[in-house]
Image (cartoon, rainbow over all chains, first blue to last red; front, side, top):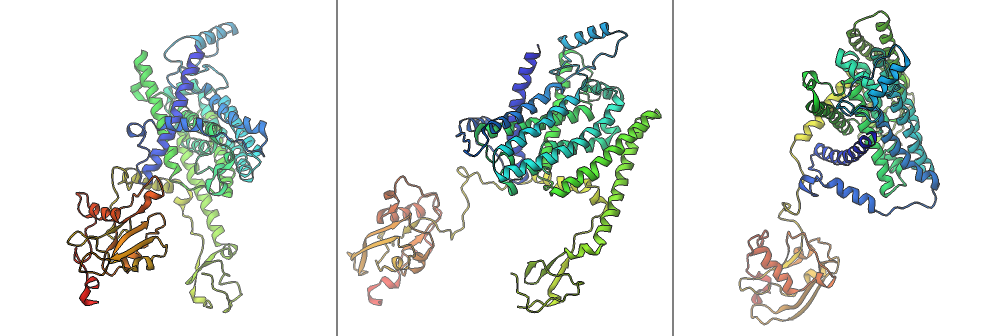
Length: 417
Length: 186
């Protein structure tokens, strides 16, 4: 039974990835006032097929200067870890795993029954995994190996720089990503994703109770996927292609596959952790296969929403500079995630209502804005800031001496046009 | 030129306000812009189906104009081939069989691959015999095919003025020969 589910999920995900590439091209085109791919098949719907054929039959070049073992290993690691992470993520209707029983034997029996039963509400490859999303986090953080190995073994400066940036970025953003979810875990009382969904069905979606955690998680997920505005590892304008500069043909395709699978996984994770997974008001109360179809559709709609959000954000926000990237992770997101977790602990300890977290999230967020405001203005008013100003002359643009620097601009200064 | 202090304009990093530091107002307004463009009018030209709307002074393939009697208008004066910076026009002149001019081109060949489509020949021609049309999709399977001789260039004239899809009407002096070609007024 699991084999069939794995096969279905694999085929589904690979097809979805192919069509996500088409969707990305469409959305990119529409935002740039273009039409987008529309030549292959009706409305360009067969474009993924053409892309796939192109990827497969292209000449597969392995440069002479690469470290062959790791060069060949890297795309495999990137794609495999991304696909492996889907193992515990629900993709449709689920039920919570059985509660602890009075004795081990009955618990084992209950788990056995839960994990092997054929039912319409077991839409997970591996149901009832206690460590739940810890597994997903562990596996997705391995994806950085794909990038580092690829960048290092390519023996190319640009690839290397991309890989280095990527390692720093992924390690930094794993921390707020993990810490923001701890608040959710505190209230659900389990790491298991099916149980977290069940908790939200009972108490309401986590996004309403922990909006701050949702924002932190979403931002961290963007960074984990190397998507704009966090796509420094593959910044085309600076690094040619980043860590996959030296890759061609299907090996490049595997990196691509890994990136898009990552998008699917993180979108599903956001939906499951914060938007109640398959749950949507009274719409998801139908029994049997109708209910299964509706729950599946609801979760896929949430997935689609986040995927589209990824793509819209891509063309909305420019790429961060590296110091801004690190500033956001270490000086903004990690403190905020810590405070969020502390607030969660307080609410749990004093048996508070869940909406306390909502209020606390908003207060913390606004307070943080005020702290940043005082910091930002202090920096701008400092005299050191003025020195780095750029003067614009009537004849052109260029750095010139500041007006308050006791060095009058000499008349013989060469004109910069 | 020395730079006076008053010519220097100082700019500093824009001051970040509270809403800027919260990031989200800026992100949402940015998303508003991108989403507005998603549903806005598209600028793409669907090329093979939708032909571009070229301006009348577009410099495409040449043509040799005909006069009112349907004869070639050219008087083989070599002005165009002299003016041509790419040396792509080859003319062989012969005594005119018609009484209204001294010479006519026995052969008139333009190498369309050498041509840089600068329009100097059109400028130089004293009798408005050579003109550039708005034909832009010039293709051929061999270099020889791209050597346009007199018949072919006259064919371009017929195609670009007479056919139903003609987009290049005769722009100057109709089909009439100009004074330069009239024997009495040399």
